[in-house]
Length: 511
Image 1 (tube, rainbow, N blue to C red):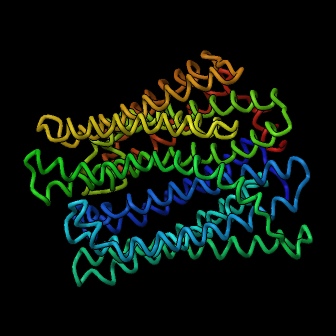
Image 2: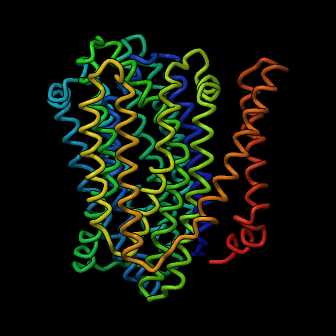
Image 3: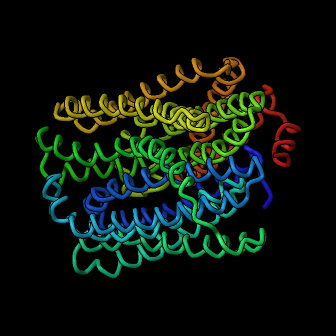
């Protein structure tokens, strides 16, 4: 199976991830149009539970990819397949236990967290998802360990297609019974997507076994020990980020009630934060997550053979790519929040101010993700977990303190999220400088991308307002201005020497 370079692997996963997010808008948009912010609020209350599980489980494929890449680096193909077999069995058992917990414990969860009782059906719908996505995650880790991201990328698109078709279909089917039933049907779409993605990857996996003439895979208890040693610290680290969303689902609706809002208003504000603003903020996160998934097996394989020059080179490149993603996305969402929200949710664009201020967190989230991936690849599993836990404690404190205050209300949660990721990013970065010989080029990695981003947003705003004067159509003006901004940004990156055409060509064809 052919390996891919860091940039090529990141591009493959990034494009697939963005396309999957785009498909996800076909999930969110009809839901918002059908059941409104209140119904989306019911759906969103259960969704962080699922995303917490997904975040925890997503640490497993990272561990699998790390072990598989290390085995391949020393030409131990049998060991790579033994890793996949062992991890697959563990993931199936883990997913089944989580599905049973959510299904049986749905009434207790709703009462314990003091959610609106109507959110019960969403918890019930989402409970079928863990078992289906666990198989998919295990297989994704195997393919990522081979440094080939195509199968993972295609499975992401198939998963999202299944989620959209089944989730939206069930939402329409159950709508007559009430918006709470419709939200529950939408939640079941996650399970359908997991099943579809797993079937595709199982077919590809059988093909790889035939390619390497693998007929029987042996049991290896040492692999299980190694897998668990790596998987749990990484899983805790990846889940801590999702805990921040879980914190919002637990604290924000409750604290908004203390602020003086009723159940319905609290649910609507919570939906605007998590069902609109956070969903859009997660789009650039797709690119940084793709970078992290490509980064870990590449750095791990070089670290396994003590090729430190290549390790430092990949760290430097990943930090530059992170800045190139984070800075323009932050400025774009900050200054274009209202036009973007009107474009995606026409007539239902309330919450664009939340999006505006939440966008400040984008650079810090991306740098947290990138530095976490680097540290994990270098066998520093625990420190990113500790740093994210510190960030979570800050978020809990600020959310509990600020949201009940009427002058802050929902924006207290925004301030808490920004503060949490600022602290996590800084702590990760400091530890990275202490533990490695990597030293950043501030001018190349920060100042040049920042200058390019500032010029880009000026062009975007100029084009948008000129187009609005000429045609007075927000959707067309917004799309044209964003497209113009992308072109200008790429040209500025080339002109300032942040990247070169030859460099891109080389990295797209070389390992």
